[in-house]
Image (cartoon, rainbow, N blue to C red; front, side):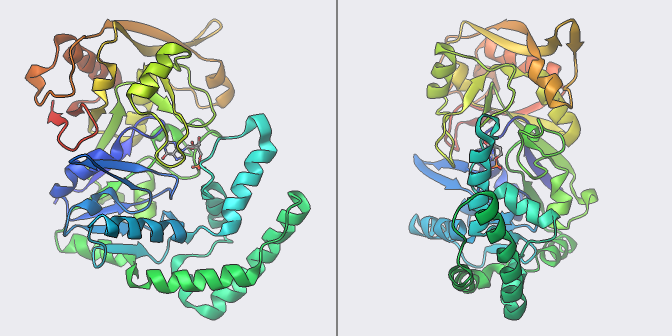
Length: 424
Ligand code: IMP
């Protein structure tokens, strides 16, 4: 069976949730491999909106096995909320949900340090989602984290939490000048949480590899996007995990040889939430028009997303790192009615020209986009259900994106609903 990985090719919010939901039927297992509750994967079914932050987007399909992999940082409070919300909406959550015993737990001190460190950075802040993601990954790499499985070894958990919290409290009181956190409160709360999630916690590495032996197929669900990847994105204005396909083997314990296909999701234009360079950003009226028409407000934080023209250099870089086999273009309908569409085909900085994505932030910050312009279309594309019915200029625009990014477009999405999707 072929296994696929779905990744974002921009700065996140490409519409991965909807596409994962649409493709779920082809797979037995859907596994999240990185990130945490910073993600907000939206799926709309018959006008009803579901936003998943931690649970894989395939959960809306009965009978599919949904796994939160070891590479995810798990905010149990958020997870329990999400389970309650989905259950209340009639979605099955039970034997279909599995949580890796190797997933690192997000604790209250992670969230607190996330917000305090952002405050301290002032104008240089990253603009994080405030979900404690960075501090939790810092502890993972610094080997001072606590994993889901550790919660069930009480002596170990208690001692480890105590020593970690001592250190965090020194930091909170001495560096950030705030009150220390109470060990008893956190310990009791997380002991209680541990009992609540116990039915779902398992050795996900064995589960996934055993499933492969039994010819089950897996979809690896990426969160955020390539340009937010901690290694290949606009560092340090990135998230703290590998949001490219590179994160999937490490975040699941499945060999990279088992990922047969990579599908990249790209919006017909570009958006970015939080700080960091964004050469094709559209300032003023037009930027706001696209923001409103595209509903470009964060699914996790509600923050308005910055909007800009399609950046073919950035997407080509993302496609290369991911080895994307094909792409899905989303939100094409948002560009309906634009007279002219710009696409970035290179950058310039003084007399220097770039045809590739620069690694260093200082170089990228100074880059100005070099644009090519294409004619837009007046027609409403949101009701279109096949490639042949697309306005001529819309097809030409997609063909241009294929040429400039080097990836074949296989699907086009023209609205938020499951049904607004067709083969290209
Ligand atoms: P963090 O992941 O909360 O640490 O935030 C780091 C950066 O990644 C910030 O600019 C966030 O806005 C951005 N970010 C994190 N998750 C997402 C996402 O799911 N979509 C878009 N941007 C995100």
